[in-house]
Amino acid sequence: TQYPYGTYDIEVTAGGHAGATGTVVYTTPAFSNVVPELSNDTLNGLDDIDEASAFPFDWNSWTSDPSHSDRVTLLRIFDLGNGNVPVDVSFSDPNASQFSIPAGTLAAGRSYGYELTFSARTAGAGTGFSGAPSTVGYDRVLTGTMQAVPEPASAAAVATGLLILRRRRRSAE
Image (tube, rainbow, N blue to C red; front, side, top):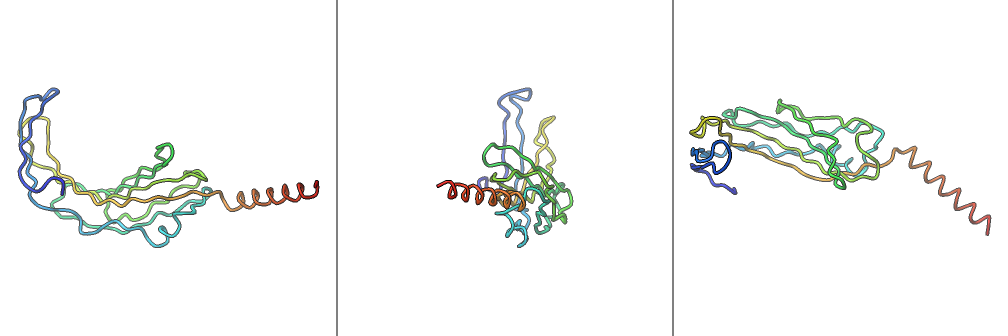
């Protein structure tokens, strides 16, 4: 881990609490023992998502340490070219394992990234000064890419148009 387990003394150096000090205790690993995974159907469909149809994004469910005060599954889909985020949803039930991306949400020809996060939080007793609760987070994250394509009828119309243009050019020669 980037921050090993232990007790951390902190000091606020700016803002309304400048000079305040406190302690955050981070002593036990409490990550979910389940890693996010996509279903085979979702995984196999990521490279050719039909923009005109809803796309079922399915994953496994998970559990977390009973000491966690907050458990949430997060799904974020973002356009790799312009950074837009057409999907940003959260589910408070760790058993939630599916979200249907509505038709028309993704644009044909665009590449997208996704982040599926199993996130658990443990609220601390405080840091020792007013207005600053402590929270320790445990996240398991799966990332990847996906591609939206034109609906099959649009792709067929484009291909037919190209064939007609090609025939006209040959006829003109």
